[in-house]
Amino acid sequence: MSLRTPLYDLKQFNSVYEPSEDTFLLLDALESELTYIESLKPLLIVEVGSGSGIVITSVASFFKNEALYFSSDINPCACLCTLKTASLNNVHVHCINMDLLFNFKSTFDIVIFNPPYVCTEMSEISPGINRAWAGGLDGRVIIDRFLLHLEHVLKPKGVCYMVAIKENKPYEIIEKMSCNFNACVVKKRKILGEHLFVLRLIKL
Figure 1 (cartoon, rainbow, N blue to C red):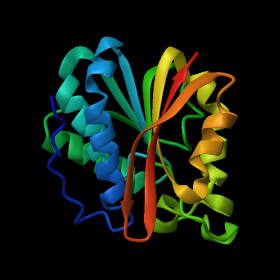
Figure 2 (cartoon, rainbow, N blue to C red; figure 1 turned 90 degrees about the vertical axis):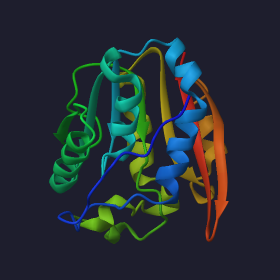
Figure 3 (tube, rainbow, N blue to C red; figure 1 turned 135 degrees about the horizontal axis):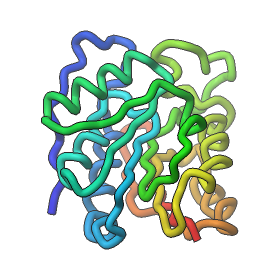
């Protein structure tokens, strides 16, 4: 079983984060988890901060009509880009322009998040392309807001896959979430200048 990299075209979307090493590590992690994800028989799958849309589109292309697919992004251009990527690959994704998952009333079986994780000054978390990667102190400002809300948007035994870097203190995140989640690292990779991780958090 494999996840294919979908067709995408970012020429009209200069303010959208281009797929990079972290994107493809996330796809690799999801691919390695496909047997487990299939066993959950997910009906509602969402990607937070979908950007180019290639991750949710890849997942939707694999599971096809077995689930409904949603995405959110605070950047309206990223929402348009996600819709275009889905259309190019003949899948349907409901994309909502909003902050994280705060406006969703549903709970999800699978939540996917490649957050803004780069350690920056707080002033860099501002509208524009910076918002796609600037994470503030320890790169954790957006991550911690997301994790605080995660329990409320996941179904029982629902799963979240989230990207982090070493500076985000991923093992501290795992410990912090251990009361309500079974959390672990499912994939990691060293690249030039970064040590990337993908965390899996299963709601207890």
